[in-house]
Figure (cartoon, rainbow, N blue to C red):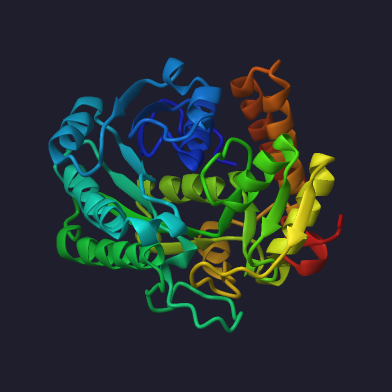
Length: 369
């Protein structure tokens, strides 16, 4: 479980002011790394960045746009990172329909500018780019999608992530063949849940807002199947992948899926019902309202991550939802140090992963349901 590998290492996280970025920075600091963040200022209030008081404990922080190549290059050269986790993105499907230009500029051209800045920074030895499980051309069959599936995407967000994956593959082959070049991998995670996400038009944040305000949650697509997982599960995958790249493992310089076992899919309706039970209150109404195209099913194959990285998920969905509900309830109680509580959840998760068997089957994933 990563032991002391990251202790003292210089790591730069783009998108650190976001949901996954904030959790990743917190975990890296727990592992003893020196961490620098590069991102726009948080766009939501509340935000995980504010709740964890991230600015007070980072080793460096830049509030700049990844599309600003001058600012990006200066930040990289100043901090001298050994490893980069690139999470900065326009991450919302619905917003991508309204803002396609910003979506492609950020997710594709922004990623290219991160790669070029990394190439021009001598200290960089490895880079893990986080894209999305939606980067694939999904035929809606429900069959698990492995890393060999063609890139695609119906909506602008998904398409931009497919474009980013093609860019990463081309950049690796075109510029990173020399022995002195950094190693580049990509990570494609499923639908991530956890405390501290307040993004618009995301299922769990929408539910929590409704639960706290006393309003009913109206589900537009309750039968849709998604690969739900707690944020700590893919983050452990990113950390293991980053370690493998720094150790010089050539076979890890490629794309990896991180998600629950394919047999452990839950529908939107099932997930919300479980979240309400874990939260202890709330009203959910199930409708059928489609504002835009949404896939009926999305299932990831995770055999490659298991075989090459030894990565498996350790939380079944109810456990992931309990972690999530507990985090939000502590936040709204307004009497808890959320940075300390987030570190407590990270320690609880790592202890669980060290003590129990991974979740590898539908029986294991649904055992507590």
